[in-house]
Length: 361
Image (cartoon, rainbow, N blue to C red):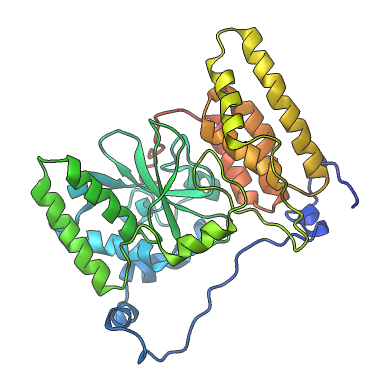
């Protein structure tokens, strides 16, 4: 195989990727015929339901954000606007991210760039794959967002994170109703003062979800299908789907286990003096050297995995190494948007800060 220098800039978004015959994942969803006779009643109701928010905003999101949101995005917002009992304030949540276009905090015709829009609502451990949607007003860093393995994916998997704890992600459903339902049920088990309002919210959510064909299960067939595609189990707990060609080119394993890497990163974080920290950094540099070899041979997934692990570990001293590794990995895989988001995030990455700071722009 002809080797390439990973430090050579790309001529265009996918030039190196195409040389290695690795194709980006994605594609359009297939639309079935117009016959509803074989569908259950809840599916028929769903097809007959027209969400005015989707009608008004879907083209704008496609133009400004470059994403085609699935129906649950619009339907959940419609649900929360029906009556006081279905307001997400009842369970201590608030909208952020793209939802603030619907709330009016961000103007529909904003002049913000795509990357600036994706920064809105972003938390410390939010990878570029995450589109933050909801956060807890209790200031515990809990938030929910879509997770897209590739920038052209239609959002279908929801994850949550407690940014004040660690970088662990938890898959919480394949639609927003399921994610909020799971959160609300857990809240109900520990919050006694607001039992009545939480129960009312859950009841309304259950009825709406049933009437519109949304499963409230935390695990679904979509999630199981994604799990089968995971190539690398990372410190973020949900793993990575990495594009490879038919010959397996695109990914090679790290020379250490997840447990061993975590131990090494903890040595860096907990080093009592500079000598011990530098010794641990030297060990990490050996792995980085192997990543450079892998990049030369089109196995970009190795740098992707290492970069995500460093990001999920979260030590601020690793940010400059992440900046060296991960944006390049994204670009080599053709994920230019993710590279741009990460570079913007790392410029001012701070713990315990939600970037829900954009108002009326």
